[in-house]
Length: 368
Image 1 (tube, helix red, strand yellow):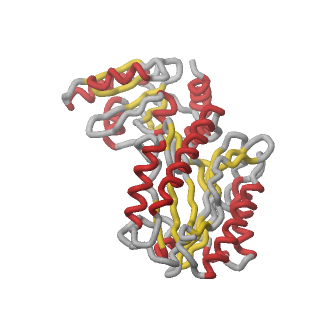
Image 2 (cartoon, helix red, strand yellow):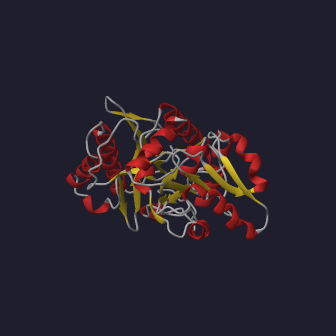
Image 3 (cartoon, helix red, strand yellow):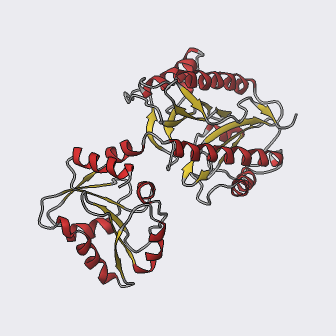
């Protein structure tokens, strides 16, 4: 039995859960190492302590099981939807007749699989296993940190290769397309953690802008938020660039955001509340008189998902622990003018903090 599964069984017992059901996604991959897709056919991993993990899947997917990190007991069904119910009833046999509590992923479980489970186990109670799963994955192993470091390296190399085309006359969409291609050339998994954000001029005042047909102009600020994936693990960075002389207010904002980023990263250490990191970044910006323009939390966890625990917001009392990995990304946004965000990926260590990202944070003038 793997360490992960032993840990999971202990957590299921502590939570008073008789089983856990997962559909393909990050937690499914974390346990099995299998990258399977959800389409119109049901797929469900059923974890019952003291039983081999059970996988309900289409029969034609059986060849995937040779890549599983776990010895799985399969319950395949033919290409006939009337067979789905039979496969589910067979898989849940150890739970039949018991008033069991089964954990599910509240943001991923589909009605399709849940309805089949309800039919197979009408007396079961289905409850959220969100906290249990978050605790299982929140502290990364050295192997996971190595994957995250590689994802960062790929992301940084891809942006460096893209910088040459960022000039007046190209569109945001042109840059995003080139960056996407360069990410694949640099070695990213095909499934990027998110679509790159390329926002120029006033569009950069929108933290989640979508690259459009705006043509870059001299004097623009260009904000790029991008990431890569390596063996399923994500990198998430943001940098800003200048096309010549930008508005003085944005230069000042960049200096403030850079100081907030540096100060927040310096504050990270094991044992402090996650909220302290947010308050540190926010304090730098507030003391400079720009507190109203920092409109989002300071960061979020990264791993198999681009956004996962721990979340770095002022009210969080979660104690940071070695192996936690998250972003630090303070920003300032001025509607109609532009925005600045500097985002790095950090790991909590026994001694303090390790920053995985080292792409220059200075305001680089691409026309110089």
